[in-house]
Length: 108
Image (cartoon, rainbow, N blue to C red; front, top):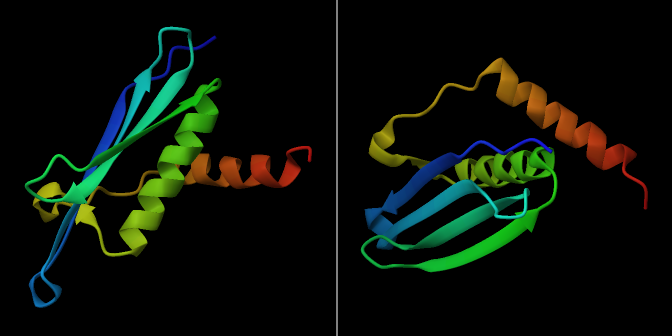
């Protein structure tokens, strides 16, 4: 089994007109048993926020979940910490496409 790579994204959404200052953090971490976990941390900036941990047996599954959640948050107005947006690479686009294909082919 492949050891999953550690990966993270730290996003912010600030809207002074709505008194909104939120953060959303995604991190992929290897587990002790060979799988990977997706750690999500979100809340109001300046607080500890809430944490949710999902575990996956396959590294491809955790990558798909990471990409999907990051894409959803960006659509909702979240941007990278410091307003520096990462460029979408061909590899990320290819992973997104393979996630869609796997989901449509997965047995019910």
